[in-house]
Amino acid sequence: MFITGSLGHGGAERHSITVMNRLVARGHECHGTYVKNDSSQLGRLQLGDGGSVCCLGAEHFLDLAALGALTRRIERLRPRVIVAANAYALMYASLALWRSRLPASLMVTFHSTRLLGFKEHLKMLFDRLFFASADCLVFVSDNQRRYWQRRGLQARVNEVIVNGVDIDHFRAPPFVEAARGVRRAYGFDDDDYVIGISAVLRPEKNHVMLVDAVAALRARGIPAKALMIGDGELRAAVEARARSLGVGEQVRITGFRGEVRPELAACDVLTLCSFTEALSLAALEAMAMERPVVHSDVGGASEIVIPGVNGFLFPVGELAEFVRKLVLLADRRLSRRLGRRARRVVEECFSESAMIDRYEKTLLSLSDGGPQPRPAGLLA
View 1: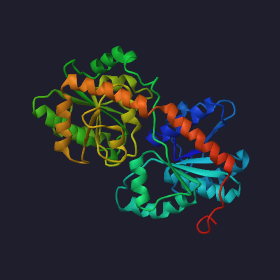
View 2 (view 1 turned 90 degrees about the vertical axis):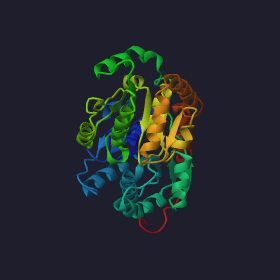
View 3 (view 1 turned 180 degrees about the vertical axis):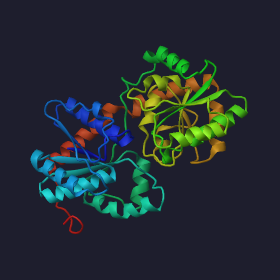
View 4 (view 1 turned 135 degrees about the horizontal axis):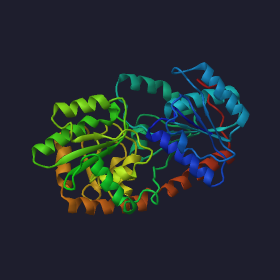
């Protein structure tokens, strides 16, 4: 059984859906459960006849009715392993499994690195009790594992399974014409330097930095434009920032897309300006589409971006360095060369099939070995 906070647009949710779908395709039985009623990605689930999906309908942080529903679902399905994505889903999974008293193993996949603000740091003091009770904690990058283990975050067993993407699905050649259509639809000329970002418009993704960079590049005479693939709570703020800098017509926001390959192919380069990342699926997808990546040096970014080879890194929040790296990639010969190398890096190190192999092996080990006795304390 897989448990997520929701099925809204987000990397952890997409990751869980992908792992479920691929395990089902390999003959395993998977059931999906999501805590809050956001089903934006529900249509991506492919659980077959033996699987099921359920929304707990939680209306606040710890909803006792939702917790009761999850406990009953665990008692009915009797899963061998429960996989929670991130701390919020882990809280529900831990409490429901404790209430059920059933002998299931508990795994948590963790998709965060830096915590932003006092509230998140305070919450982690509470969350780490649930992490400690898990049978297995999966980090998605080595940098992330080192960051958190220095801070004492661990379960009984700790693994690193790096994210991966479907290298057959994310291929540039089939989308050459579609990319031209996307550029025309958003008013981009052939000579425009289209800088993409694929992320939900949330504070930690720092979209306004790309707006600032577009304005700075245009002030240098570079015909830069931005294609923001996604949507979110900060859309109005991002659009207002663009208007205030005189680049309102040069910054385009697509809204949420179920299919992002045409938009990725329409970009000359993909950026991530995030304050926090673990190991970005969006970056890997762009790299598989032969696009170089300019990424803030956070989380696992340095594990996927080799500066000057398949993209560039820049210090978090440093606009001048970000712009300097984007200036380099305005040279299309360099950009295309780095893009081809980006594809090879994904093929060699970050394929989805290799990721699923690791999850399958780890889950089978947990299923065969069974859970370890729960420690005394919070969940005793």
